[in-house]
Image 1: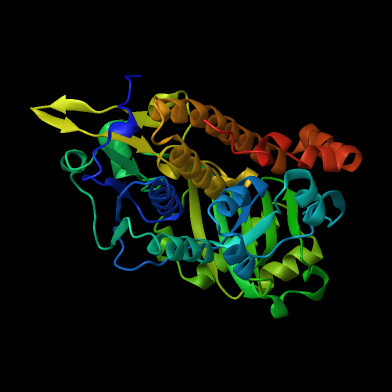
Image 2: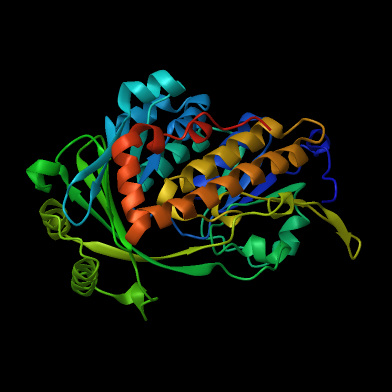
Length: 401
């Protein structure tokens, strides 16, 4: 990889440009502003609104938010589960548990949190707006990445899995459909079946499927996600809730996911959104995080850094997509101003992100196992559940570049 310019030499009159105003983009803007740089954020949506559902934030992600002074805002809107429980989706039989709560705090220095994605984006947005060095622009679709690179010393591509910035600098094609479909729903905690109304993360493991549910919004709502195998449905974005719910019920029946509590919970969800899951292969090098600047037709083209899903979209089976975006942003802020800092950032981040991508894929195979692998999974969880479900290498991060 060509060497990147020393960030300490960036002209202060030219702000860093951030493309994308989601978790990665707002985190990057906040980290750069805290490092002493001026920032402009280009968001294509006309308003600051995040669609989606709940996400999990391990102690590594909470550590980033705490370093930015956002622990109190997090406490005001998140839930902090006491445990992670895994169960058989066919029978409801318990498989293994990992205590969270005080154990996570004692072991890793920060708690394990669950939060609605919109609430995470909102608390980041409030923090960014408090930074005088950041200017936010909405309704700004970036179509000419080359032109934008001429206006800044550093361009940050934080524009998600379908990143225009990535295609402009890497031109490596679109992400790939995984063959997995995620059905996401949200319901008030008062409407959750009584047996499942708890402050815990529950994962139901089945044949070619799994489901997970956990509290969000200070425990007032339950987030429910069911992931099943299946072909890409035609016109999935236009499906109404009746079609989505009926299709999900059919897929659960075919997968043998007949545990009464799980089926009761699925039936209680008032509305479902269908999300086909896409990803890319695990990262292979720092070049997928950082593209050095160059002269093009007499014009200087800025260094480009890719963060979050623009760099490393990953399957949700380790619950680390948002966490890795936050880690990328935090580590970038720590690197700015240090000689060779961007290169060190890219070298450190690609290795960690590639490991998380691969680990998430492996978890998916284990979650959805059949036959001998399923028997081995269940036996292992029964004997070594806590040890197998904890991930010290992950939760002790992020590593300093």
